[in-house]
Every structure is written in C-alpha cells, then in structure tokens.
Length: 145
Image (cartoon, rainbow, N blue to C red):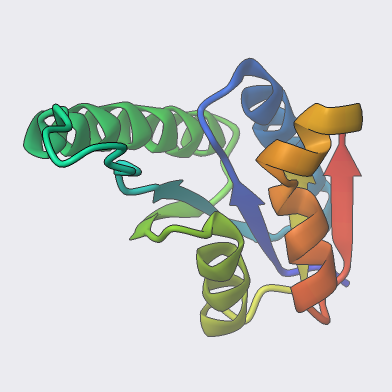
C-alpha cells in the first residue's frame, strides 16, 4: 500500500526516533524513503538603525552542516536496514512548504513525521509545522510523539 514514505526531520531526538519508526514502517511495506530537512534563513529584525546583525554566512554554514549530518544519519540507518533512502535539503522560511512540495515531487504515499506537542503560548508563537503540513497536503500523515 505505501511504496514511498517522506520523513521530515529537524535533527531533534524526537525526529530521529520518528525516522527509526519510518524505517521499520518502510521495511514492512517494502517502501523507499525520502528524508527531508529544511534550513530556515536567519531571521533579521533590526530594532534600531544601528542594529548589530549576526554573521548570516556563518549561521548558514553551521545550519547546513547540522542539517546534512542529520540527513546523513537517517540515510545511513535506512541503508543498514536495507531500506532505500535519499535525502532532500531545502531552504525556506516556512519548512512545511518544502515538506509538502517534496512529498508531491517524489510521489510519496504518506508523510511520517514527529510532533513536539507544544502547548499553550509556545504553540501559538512557534507554530506547528506538523499542523501546517496537515492543513496543506492531501496525503495521509502519520504523526509520532
């Protein structure tokens, strides 16, 4: 039934556990996986004319290294389990857009992702990429906590 699984990751331990579940899910279904992670550009909100801005180039380099390491870890774990897996690295202000677009482009049957389960004001201010994915895709989404 499921032949192509999309696994978004933010590099957190929760995402790593979701990836392990996705690998087992893929083995059961004889599916291939695509791991996707998104680099969010450094938000810059100058409060005065003399705002001190962080080094955007250094931020991008560190983010890219961290994201690539997380994707490499998932690809290696899938390979060790005999599950074909490729990786997609995207860049966007809103990660859900890359997740939904990648699922469509890769003809995925399901998105399997973690949710941090934030509550209250944290959920309001931080938003939920999982909620946004659910709202913008027609695919089934398996949410793991």
